[in-house]
Structures are given as structure tokens and as C-alpha cells.
Image (cartoon, rainbow, N blue to C red; front, side):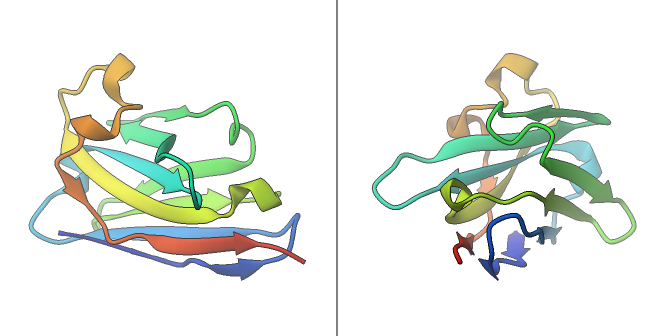
Amino acid sequence: QLQASGGGLVQPGGSLRLSCAASGRTLSSSSVGWFRQAPGKEREFVVALRRSNSYYADSVKGRFTISRDNVKNTVYLQMSSLKPEDTAVYYCAAGSLTLIVSSLWSPDQYSAWGQGTLVTVSS
């Protein structure tokens, strides 16, 4: 089970940190991804972490950072320089550690999902 938290309202240019806590699953033995879905749009890939390697969508590269705390069994998404177009419900997901890199962007490859947390970037 995955539990996403940390969403909220933030002004453009601000920062926010999302958390994805797991129970019944060890995140260091999983591929973990963050996805987001804006109103009226499809769910899109944001970032994935597999072992010690991270992979970012071009739209967030240089602004978002994914990290993992193995003791807390939690993955974080640090978001900085937020833009209004980052507004969405953010979901964390976990899948097999054997996922190949080219498949990390696909939501279908992940077997477990958190409930989503809303991030609103607005002045």
C-alpha cells in the first residue's frame, strides 16, 4: 500500500515536497514513479527512481528531485520553481525492480498506486 501526501497550494516559483510512504512493500526493492494528472488531461510521467538511478520528464528536469529514505521506506518528490502548469493530482506508484528503463514512463507498468495528492500552483 502506498500513501501519498504533501500536496497543497503554493505560489508560482515556490517549493513543495511530496511524500510516498509504503507499507507491505520495500521501496528500495521496487521501481518507484511519480505521475500527475491535470483536469481534462491524461496521466503523465513525472519521474522514476530505480535502484539509485532517476529519470525525469523534460518538463520537470532541473526543478524536481526524487529521493528515497530506506529507513522510513518513503520516497520524496522535492518540487521547486513551481509553475501554474504543474498544477495536478500527483500519484506515486511502485512496480518491479526489473522494469526496463524504456518502460518506466508507462503507468501500465506499475502494480501499486497511492491515492493521489493535489498540488495547486497559483497566485
